[in-house]
Length: 558
Ligand SMILES: Nc1ncnc2c1ncn2[C@@H]1O[C@H](COP(=O)(O)OP(=O)(O)OP(=O)(O)O)[C@@H](O)[C@H]1O
Image (tube, rainbow, N blue to C red; front, top):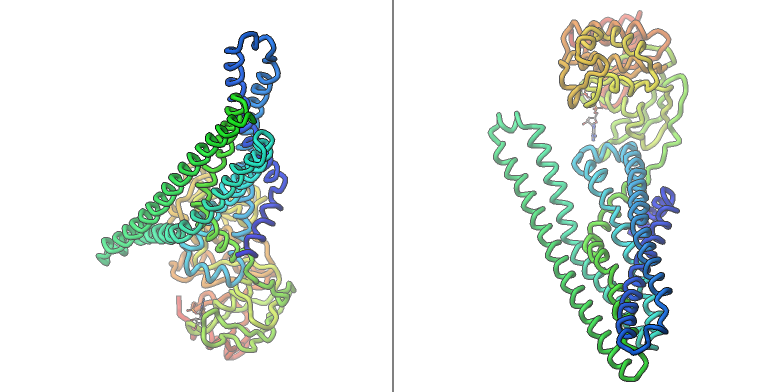
């Protein structure tokens, strides 16, 4: 935890160090001017009232300095409060935005991203809920703690000047109250905050399941049960919220009692000091109002204390992901040929290694089909080449690659934005050209807005064949020396499949192509066929070899 906190503070400092410091300074200035304003105004009102009563006193009392002081302090406080809100929130939002990118990058690292994808709800929660919670660290903890410390110390100095050693007591009492609040709030909030985070995560997950699988749930007659699970998560969330609210109410009660005790003690102390002739009537007003002002940071601190548990949990979870030790494999290099040397690879959680001393060389420009029964290791080979996973030992080297998979992600955005993902600087002429090549130009031209027509989630609004063509158009935009094709025409009708394969063949000259397939029509593009079984090469034939046609014939016909 300590390591994670230090890491996050370092990232906070790197992202917006001076703004965070400036915001902290402004917050302290706001608290100090607030207390000083309250004290000075109280003293001024009391002093003028008392002098008004005393015959001839008004003539001797110079109103100008205190009234000027009140005005200056009021202006300073207003300006400081406004700037503090601007600076602290701006700093926090920019830190969180930067952290979101870093966290996303960290989660996208090989292996870690894969592991988390098995629990996508958790991944979503890390990037959203956990990160948003981190703003409390600065806004609701660091800022009020700094304000309370500074105000207590400054208050101790001023009150000690007014009332001697006894003036130190209120400041010490306030520091003690703040500490108790943090400890009690942190302890109580840890369990309830944990329950809240878990319940919220479960609720999101259940709701996503319910919406995404509504047809299947309905057909299986299980909609009610899943809805009940979502309701149960919501009930847990409400219960956790209730616990947190109760905790905050108890802390508010404690704060109220502590404030009353402090003021009552202050009144008694003032009475004693007045008796001894150490404090005048206006001094009493000054003393008591400064006391009131000193309590101001307790309220934000109370809220921060309740959130402490939740914040620390977020620190641990975000810190875990950010600091996960994932060595950037020195074994991954870029070369014109594809070379895999002495690869040892075991999927996380698998009992045995899939690849054990695996070697493969595919010279630049070769077109290779990888075939084999289900589970032979074809997709894992692509995952190794694309660095989606890292081998435990051995060396992988490839040229720069583009990947066309069976299911390519399309986004809820315009056709243009979906295409530009592959080539951000591509002109409209180029976009229409690849759409034409993929046989989709006419369809897009007829859509309202053309290239600006918006697609729904996952490319909805297009038929599945049209989605595959759009994915192909995007793929064609990438001018990469190596094309990796993962069962690209699996499950689509012959017309679209023929078009896709023809386009790939047309653009294949001069590139290395590695495709994995169960289909004869796809393997027919290759001039070399490699058959895998249980992570080993059991057949390696080239066009012209007598075995080549048999290897093709062993595949599923179109
Ligand atoms: N993420 C994973 N965790 C654990 N084991 C895995 C994982 N992914 C694949 N495997 C296992 O590794 C082996 C090879 O899987 P892979 O997906 O590479 O096979 P494939 O040849 O592509 O199969 P298919 O033709 O069905 O797509 C299988 O036994 C599979 O169960």
